[in-house]
Length: 579
Image (cartoon, rainbow, N blue to C red):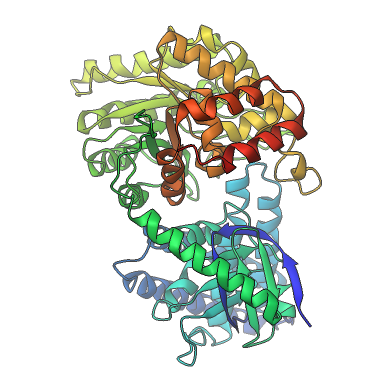
């Protein structure tokens, strides 16, 4: 009997193959009480498991293939860093000592507490870091049980292997580096989890958040993975197999064609040049940016330098990170967003507490202005790094002209400090603002005399406009990037900036969605910034689009306030050959 399951689509395309199940070590944790004399030995056993896990992760990091995605090494480095965090490496020792329990139980209690903290975080990317904690903890469990070496790529499988797991870590990916698996599916994970990011960077069909796939699929069962629609089919019949084999061939052909345009200039059929840039979180992401053929970094989320650590990064440490990115981009522009921290993105060293509604709390530029010394240290580091390439500064979550002016004053203070100290910085440093709050979109014209460029952050703009938490399953279906109100705000922002001659880009998820490429082009957008994995798909649409030919349909969409009509017109827009 065939079983169809729905999850979150991560990797495009189709895979057909036999299932290989990956087991977990945390399913059944036994609790037992120690006598006082046994506690030191149990703590020592836990310490040995930590050491063994670190050695294992470092060995895996050292054996990453040269052609592996840059994200793989970055995520393994993060796991090694998490392993050294006191919350994982030290606090379970205290639980063993105070509760006189076995190491497995202490680790489970601490892990449950950490997961609860992550679940309370509003921001999706940071909330998904709970899976990284779970992956590290699971590896410690395996070492406690003496199972660390049990995961190995089975030689019996060919390149049609479908990995099926509750979750997959970057370390698991390295274990399977010698096995050309075709796809993977997991029970957990979100669109910004590292499992999802790896799936996109590996360009593999993958579906996550299936909840019960690991329980329902048996070893070597035939499985179809549709990474485009987020569907898997267990034991498909011959009719279904025939159809998906056809789709698989079409996907492989399309992927080969995309590779051929990697070095092509992005311009429409009528000759209009389009800038396709990339979003990054860490300095090591630059390799993926260059290999995708991006013409720059449109958004470097600098706050990730501040997270997952016990202390604030120094000015020099920040400077080195920014300089590395700018130098490695070899003269291409790099837009660095100042730290978007606070409330739900609250590092351990920042004691501002958690707001009742983090999305509306002390975050972004509000926190920067509330902590001027912290803010100015970052601005100094950015100014210093501007000497090494085309660096641009982007202020997040600007709500009013008053906030923008305050931020610019802090930037001028940083310049004065460096001048007084005789430290060089570039006199030509473009400054921009992110438009991600409806109020900012409505008064964007007042900003343009004070900035060199603007960037539209569509993720938060949609969320704030529609009063919808896109991470809340009960209302996520209402999160609509083509809602008439959203389109009007984006259109107003674009037209106002274009009329003033101010460069404008979109750096939210809309920029990397090929379904929306023609709509944004028709609205006047000429600069897109997205995850590197999406760049070729968007470029393909650009190369096949004639602006004059899409104008009538786009115009009808912009005039409509009927969501159903807009959806129909969008479908027509993408069906048009536009050639």
